[in-house]
Amino acid sequence: MAATRTKSSSKVWQWLQKVWHRHRHESSHCSECDQPIRYFDQVCPHCGQGSPARISPWVAVYLFVGVAMIWIIYSAFHMLLH
Image (cartoon, rainbow, N blue to C red; front, top):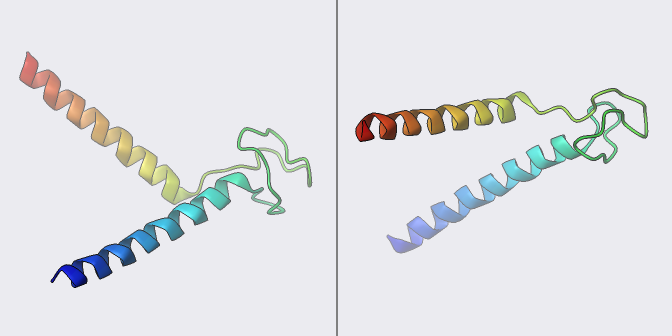
């Protein structure tokens, strides 16, 4: 039983690492020429693309869900205290 849990845990961990590296690559490379950039660059120094570091739709969903969860938890605690 413990071996099964460890095996499935490692698969989940590998999947999370793969997703993290893919999204990190998307946010640190130009969406047009795929050259490395800094996240807050206004223009790509390689191809001139404006606003080159765009977040993917999945990252936007993760951010929205995270903010919504924080708001729900804050509201619940606020209601309990008052």
